Image (cartoon, rainbow, N blue to C red; front, side, top):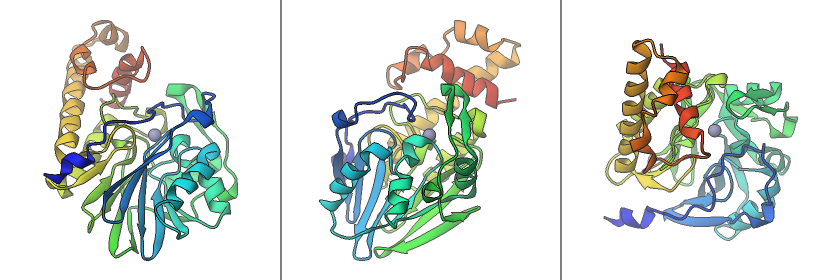
Length: 298
Ligand SMILES: [Zn+2]
């Protein structure tokens, strides 16, 4: 299968800094990979950027951090001399929307679920990182928002933007490029990483699993899957992630049902075997992940 070509292993950084940690932006490696037809992916810092570049112009999915905008635009210019007409935000987190103001003030139309606009306009607190996101200026806010699903018809195909309720946050979308047979998962998929679930902003483990199932339902063996973080993969890779989510959820649910506290569950280290394949952002990340499950199930 040609898919092997798409199994990109080198990811410059998967740092989940969300803008909270000072970064040396010059050191961030911006790397673009061609996937299929009009579709490309750009790795840098923050969420993976999906790119459709074709006869009607360029549109992108997520835009990482503001200090990277010029370099991201330069990388896109190597693919196409056309304008970035639209930027879709998969959710409101700053490592996916940090470039919005630069893009928006440059004439790009920003598209996202209603809650992305609402949360960015109001300002947000992300408990897991003890991080406050200030209310964003007008140019950074999505000017086209939707409630459930919508489509962009560009570059010879339909890009279906599908809201997934209460998953990584309460503002998530996955984007299905039907013609290209490609799905951008946003942060419903952390490939090769234990995920972050922003329970403080409406996220839940069951929503993440439901979102993954929604994607699996429309995927086939040829589908290219772009995760929010980590390397590009395929349906089999997403199924493996789904198994890990369901198994770790069952472990925590079983222990919680026996009356164990979160601290007891963390002390029992019940998911060590998963940490080989599913890496941690920091030394206590697997404990935090157990907390995301614990606090989002009955
Ligand atoms: Zn996120």
